[in-house]
Length: 438
Image (cartoon, rainbow, N blue to C red; front, side, top):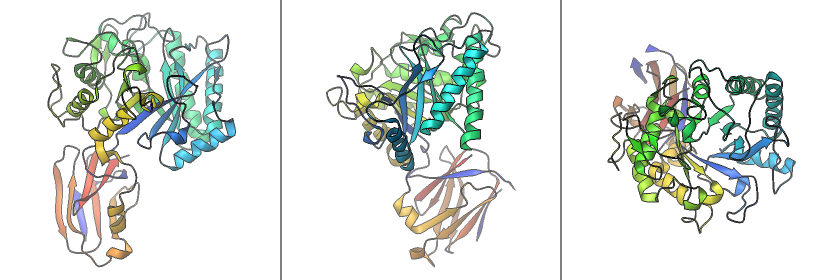
């Protein structure tokens, strides 16, 4: 039996899902690479399993410079750390290396410094087999003095753009795959560009624009922030649902600055970054129920929680997920409860974000190839041979039914012709698997 969706081949990546609306969401957590009296020290394999993206904080410049990047794992020797990275990767997690942080400015002022930066960072990525790089440059690392978002003139910004591109190219040569890239600026460096385009205000916007096709996660720190404009022209305060919703939509929809128009990113590149509990940051924490309301509204799953009204009706169901500073704070029971942030994520996204195989579906059917191009093959597992597939449906990202069929055979080919790029869910008798354009 062949089920046809009208012309042209495309490449699809198959993912398992419990519901079509919210696959791809990640719980992203920073992991402190230092001992602290206020939070527990955690190794990679001691983190709550709901965190599927772990970001090691931080790789920093060596003494007396701001470009020669070093990272030495604490609480474990280098070889054991490298082995541990591979262990958690085998369990489906991604491990990234974050460079910078609040106390370690990085500035590339000339090609020589840039070359040293590229060499040292590349060596670290290879030494520990990291899945990618997180850019968390703060303080006086980046500043704009002129030019525009599309045509920056400041040397540290231009050199950093070139350095990241070179790192991605070298990573692909070394690893044979794309380097995951996350960008984690403070609000002043991004949404702050709406107020003025000078100094730190809007300084990350040229970087984001230049790398927009390579960025996997933009997770602005919605904490330790002053008040910020929303794209509706109103001002919102941190630590509120309105702040989370308005600042997240701003980087998706884009906004005007004195340095030109910032064109937003896709929602599936954007994660919401917040502190795990009140003590984790100087401001910006939301009580769990308020955070749930903000996230559900953003995802198009709940009512408006405050005064800010989303520009896009229906919200952003393909939002990339939630980022937490930090896993260590989330694991500190005295600060808001034991893994409260992970609990919020689970309640908002639920099992819909589970990237592990669904046992009920896997027992019954196999779908291949993965990735697919022209068609998907549905074949029965041994125990379901000669049992009809039954009711087959395909939904698009908005939950609209694009195909429905009763199949009386135990296998089928789905022809992928003229299927627009995007996210879809294949449902067989309410057991669901998701496929997404690669």
